[in-house]
Image 1 (spheres, helix red, strand yellow):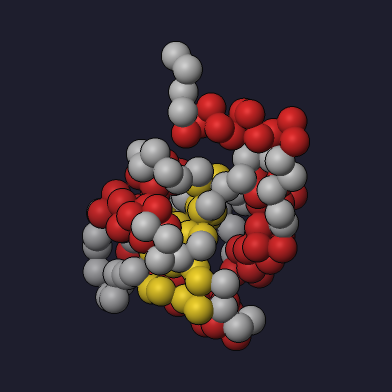
Image 2 (cartoon, rainbow, N blue to C red):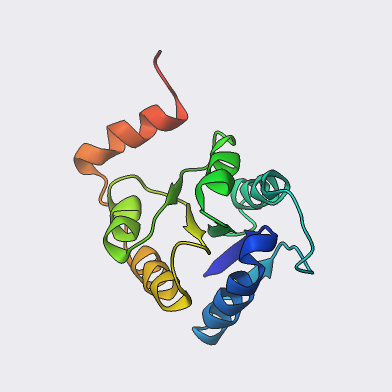
Length: 145
C-alpha cells in the first residue's frame, strides 16, 4: 500500500517509528514532515496529508499530533477525507469497516508506540463493509442538509 504520514513536533518521534514500521511491513511510505522536531503547526501538516490522499498519491493517511485531535480536525476539513482519531485497535478497525475512513489520527501523548502499531495494523487490515454503511458514508461526502 501507499501510505502518507505526517505529524507535528509533539509526534515527531512516533512518526519516525511508525514510518519505519510501515516500511518494514512492505508499504511505500511518503513522509510529509516535519523533518526536524522543531515546533510546527499541526494544521499545515494535516492539510498536506489530506491533499496527498485526496489526489490519490497515497491510499491512506496517518496523521499524528500530541492528542490526535487537532490534526484529525485539519485533515477532515478536506471533503474527500474521512479521518478517524483512535486510541485502540477496535475503533481503528471500525473506522474502516463502517466509515470507510481513508486516514487515521493518533495522539503521541496518549498512546505508546506499540498501541499505535496495533491501531495501524487493525486499520490497514480492515475493509469497508459497504451495505448499510454505504449510504451513510455517501452522506459524509454529499451532505443533504
